[in-house]
Length: 362
Ligand SMILES: C=C(CC[C@@H](C)[C@H]1CC[C@H]2C3=CC[C@H]4[C@H](C)[C@@H](O)CC[C@]4(C)[C@H]3CC[C@]12C)C(C)C
Ligand SMILES: C[S@@+](CC[C@H](N)C(=O)[O-])C[C@H]1O[C@@H](n2cnc3c(N)ncnc32)[C@H](O)[C@@H]1O
Image (cartoon, rainbow, N blue to C red):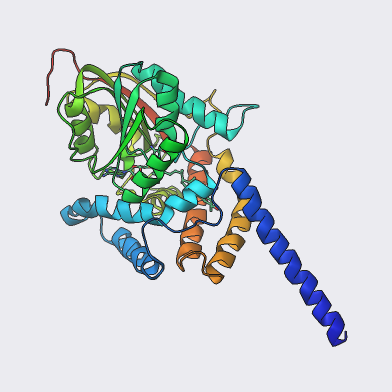
């Protein structure tokens, strides 16, 4: 091949890559995602690698030390600085799973799973509802819109607060949705100040579940309902099966969890802090459609995203650590899928609780 032909081939190839790059970004924008905006939360380029290493060294430390429990909220905050943009970009504004629904889109299935909360806690106009661990507010907006209630969300991550407020404004729901930055283990809200509360796949980050449940109990009005979708191991999990252990530890490490609890512990914790348990059920069990199929179907997209984040890192649109964080999430998706397929793990063990009517705070 002579030089001219070589140059022409190279030019065609470069144009192809550029066209593909623009197409990927364009299609992501059409779906409402922000392909060019992988800033990694509030972390600057140079700090991403350090934070990422810090995150891993934390999760490799021996478990159950008092010191690590105290540090959990700070590391969870670091984790969300690392993953929030990728989550939003690759999953949407709701950071949770949902049972798949035949002939319905992921978006619909997500909304259905969120709106179920409205019926469970009987949220209605005039109510003030607490969203414990609100992320960037996908569930909050769906629940406020559906119920006519006012929803107040709390998240430990400052970056998510900004994202959630901006989404609330764009959705015209900033009058109905409020977002505060804080630790759900020590909330600044008044005793008995909420008519209802919910947490969607968030309390799994608490080192001791009783601490967050006790706080929710405190801020609920007597008679108020609280529902939680909990991440737990099921009765099928065998601690003496190395593959089970690898999967569960993979889920814990890749999702910043201090340790998954067993399904049969949840109601006991709720009762211990004073709640009446109204209902308890794994929403992932049949006839519910599998929640993990959405993760499985994304293999091609993961590869595309990997190329995209690599190119963006190369062009310095994204900080260095993004590629590694993306790889870590890919690995986590594998563990989550295995957890779902084997049935040893569920992200939607639902527990519905009531604060007894004759009790004031604590
Ligand atoms: C409740 C929690 C988060 C649950 C899920 C929202 C996220 C768990 C794993 C995440 C993802 C895994 C693979 C990513 C993929 C490699 C990337 O290309 C696009 C984004 C992913 C699909 C990402 C999206 C969010 C999750 C599904 C935990 C933290 C308690
Ligand atoms: C997986 S996300 C779920 C977000 C939201 N519920 C949703 O479904 O989109 C978990 C959320 O819990 C929040 N969180 C974890 N630990 C927290 C803590 N100690 N205090 C406040 N928020 C916390 C995280 O910041 C994040 O917003």
